[in-house]
Image (cartoon, rainbow, N blue to C red):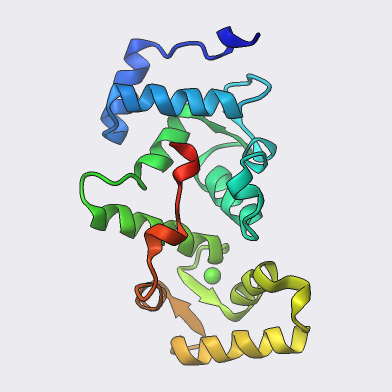
Length: 184
Ligand code: CA
C-alpha cells in the first residue's frame, strides 16, 4: 500500500542537491523518504498541515511561526519542495563545523521572532512570542511588563539586535533548544 509513492530521486537531482547541501547521497535518500512520508497527498510539496502532523512540532508553542519561517522564507507559494527542504536542513546539520550549524540555527530562531525582517526584535514582536509561549497563563499587563523589561535590559534603542539576541542565547544550549531530530 502506497509503497510506490516514494519515487526514487533521479541521479542528477541527487547530484544537484548534494552539491548544494553537502549531504551524501545516502543522507539525501534518507531525508527524501522522510519528506515523502510527510507528503501525505503525494504532491511533491510540503504544506503547513504536513508539518503540523510532526508530533514534536505539534507540541511546540511556536510551531506556527517555525512552520511560517520554514515555508514562507525557504519555500514558495505556501509550500516547500524537496530541494528547498534539503537546503534548509543542511544549514542545521552538524558537520562542516559546529559553529556554522549553530550560527544558522540562531539565525533561524531569530527570524522566528523578527517577522518584519528588519533585523531587530521589537517590543511587539517579543510580546507576540511571549503570548505564544505563555498565552492565557499570564495577564496581558504582566506580559507587557515582561516584554518591556526584557527590551530595556537587552536592547539599546527599544529593540533587540541579532548580536544581543545571540549573546543572550549563548547561555543556553542552542542545539538542545533547536533540535531537528524529528527529521533524521
Ligand atoms: Ca523586527
